[in-house]
Image (tube, rainbow, N blue to C red; front, top):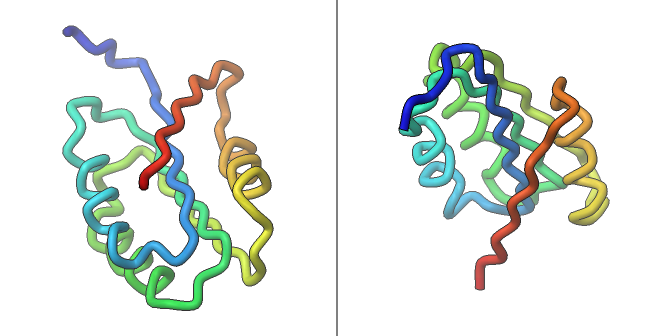
Length: 103
């Protein structure tokens, strides 16, 4: 599959106390074939090391992405509000939503 060079892909990562899985998730995004990725990480409150882990990973991989946005809230607003915050950072009008619930 040929990927167009001008294509900009926004990847949103929504989290709530995700310290166990966040590095694997972010590494998977980093390894994608598309080079024009704008990464939006939105943490909806965290009582564990999620914020520290994310910030360290971002600092180590900042050059991989066109831009990286790290949104962190000090209160739990819920999944819909967290998703809307991340989507508000997307600069394009067309957004494809894909949701996969992990069990």
